[in-house]
Image (tube, rainbow, N blue to C red):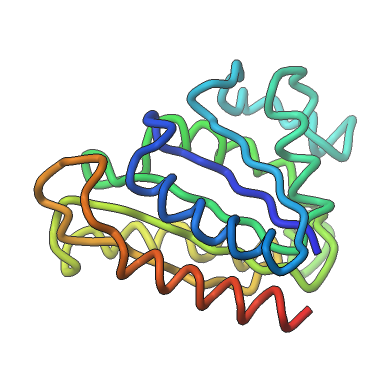
Length: 191
């Protein structure tokens, strides 16, 4: 069992990172291997729209720090995608990374369904968002990203840590950490 943890917060120990770490700690305790990628500490470009990943290669042709992250998505069983909500969307770091996941899609316009995943089957994604605003706000983020997770073939679980109005990166997130511990036990034990 392998878990990849993609941290989209610019703060390495921020709220979303602390919640994601809870899953990683429990998964490792249960025997899973894990890799974590702190996007803000990596050097990479956003998608260049060159379409080389669909015409000349079966992966993104950019050679930078995201090469290992995109490859880890192929070999992992569970992927955690975490980001704080900034200005009504994921962080800029996360968005730049997520645009590059376009390379995980095979495109063939001769097919009735021209888009298919290049990832192996039976993968789980956890989309973790933390926000200062209340739960009713920013639900459109899930609506925008869910179709892409489905396109990649992920069984998706969404965790939203909401109402964190203090802005304190050390705020109490124990309720969401408990959810992540339970989720790790359920997913790792199921495999």
